[in-house]
Figure 1 (cartoon, rainbow, N blue to C red):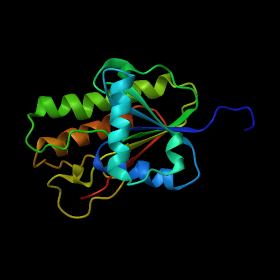
Figure 2: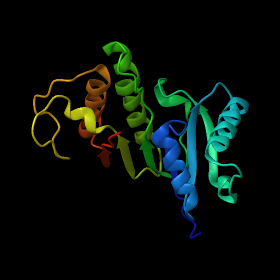
Figure 3: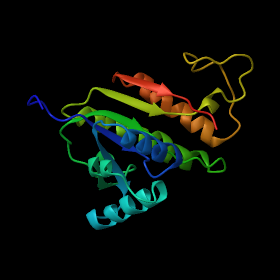
Figure 4: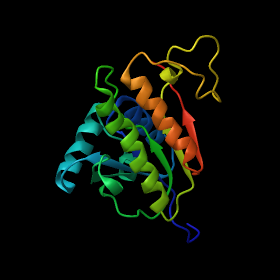
Length: 187
């Protein structure tokens, strides 16, 4: 190392489908340490979530799992329960509620409120460089025709509260002023 802080990637939603896949891919490579904020009351419970994640990913965990650290947190709490973490340069925000049947206030609480808290966290990280916000291709809602990566508000209507709340979260990221990119995976 050259004396600068280690490169660290913080991944929210690491126990979900997209986050878990990302963790597995990053551990396949020689790369940065990974910090996973997980919903847990304390370190012991967080370590249990880590063990559960690893058992879902591997029959025999690779040595690279030593690069993975979990921290107890609550994405819906202001400051997410995390202190400024040295070395975190990239934040990948995968956490979301993917329920299509939630009420709009409940969907907003998780998907928009959680994103707002992640943006606030990014502003406190001393080594922060970039946010990757995982959204969904379905922010296109009922838009007709082509909906490109630079399209945001084309007057689309939404089929459900998931689509709408993810679209609203994108708007927060776009207006945040933080260096960020939005990715929109489909099913």
